[in-house]
Image 1: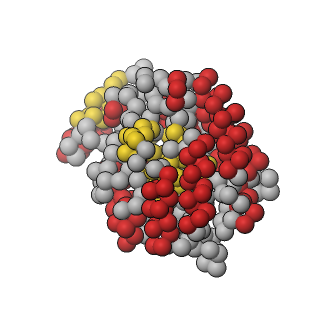
Image 2: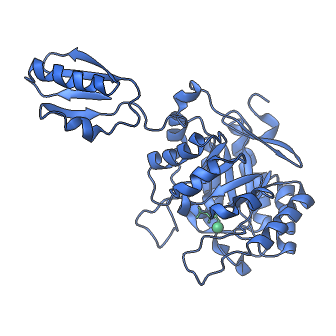
Image 3: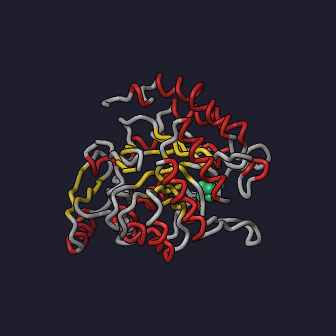
Length: 352
Ligand code: PEP
Ligand code: MN
């Protein structure tokens, strides 16, 4: 934190402010420039409110935060090194990380019945996915829309895990459901609508399953990283960040605006692995392949793609779901080319 004094600020006033800050446990350091004096603050400043310091004197021009408000999520926290998140699945350990092969997560929006979830699991596995996604508890805008089959769908996910050997990713909406979902899931998903459900984040941080934290639909990158910080501060170091599109002004041609700029931005700010969800990001299956390829070219560590055996009949998010055939083609003919070019296809993984 830096305090910029107004030109001509009296020396006595600078001393008074510095003395006051010392009583707060901080170490003020005076830097005298040609026109202005600046006070640098060393110490634990993450919890300080710039407004409180501003109130100390009318001679203070501005208070500038130079360090990140997120600490454990910051790249510096790991001395510039990326974090790998290794997850054991029945088919073996899958690692999410910057120097790892691309990980693809695929499956329907909702778990509908045993046949469809097992069939989807086997089809996406054959195409190269490493995790099956599917909601048992669905966050729906309308209380009258299909809400997910709940606990019974967890059993179906367990059956699909046993049949395919894929790891399972499914959403938690209520703190009361964490334990039973964690018995089946390999990764707990916190959805966009719950990104700032701080009670949920604290509870998720206090348990040890890895977490997929989706970006809130109107969340800034800083708010998203602060949400991750809740989980990390709770003691759970395994957080994967998933961009799923944000609200902008076009509602006609796309459901959301997929913000691929987060890939280089997050890379600079955080050590956590990055996932891109082009399905919710565009809302239309025909746009999913292009954005999936763009995400891989831009350096994403993982993709989440909705796949349904019969999108026209899906109980949720059919319009954005790929058929298993289209998903297979995307993996083999399109993503394979791009991922190989950037050294992220399994056969040519960097450092493997
Ligand atoms: C989902 O993954 O099906 C979902 C509801 O996603 P989001 O929270 O990103 O809307
Ligand atoms: Mn969905």
